[in-house]
Length: 341
Image 1 (cartoon, rainbow, N blue to C red):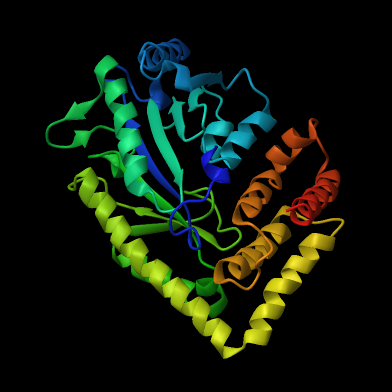
Image 2 (image 1 turned 90 degrees about the horizontal axis):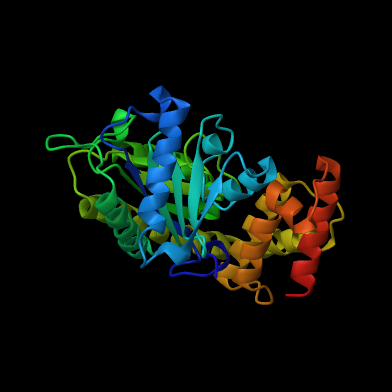
């Protein structure tokens, strides 16, 4: 099962865990300075490293960005397999994706290789182990740019060292409802932790989902970085659960009215935007996770979360749709999933 449809540990608050590694080939300039011929050679060597390994070659497939539609590219963004910037890149580039869609290897993004692994729920250690395994396979076939003093050399200095970002996507409706989210942003910044939106860097929080990740990659090893992120996220999880319970105890009728009203709108709407549906789904997920809404399965909510997004909605429909028709189709899919749950 694909990671984004599955349920993992601590899933009442934690949506997903991700490890991302930045790597560069030793004898090539960074992607921003490469010729198209050099870019093509990077792709060839990266593909040979993965598909030349008998242990994993059948677990992956390659997609050239020039060979797929813009809708297909955006669908990969919505699955968090490639970055939004990569989807609109004009460079010679491609992505190697695992068949279970837990691993995405962007070739010629900001760095030659952006390897990432995603797991549902709080499974950052499992994501690291899988990512480390694939990274070892890559480095056994490719000579990467590495310095004994600075670690892995990357296009952006903020990625120097381990080249690693450990990210955990959290659903924080109580932080948002109480206004504590501002305090969280301030506290995380002081601790060297980034708080970003649904799609990471340069994106906005949607449906009260926030990505928590390390800012510093130089000076600490991978395990220390992961442990620091996990320790901070554990405190956020505890506080979010505490705030949820406090909100419910303060006014249970108001709390229940909000989550059931959102469920009612989703089950009866005929036209709905992605922004509105994400906000309403946040309320419904809150109701499910706190135990008020018992008739909706979390996996159904995960399916809805994927299929209401513009590109995957159009792929599910089998054809391009105008924004107006997408809003109609989105409402139809939500009703179908919730009624046939």
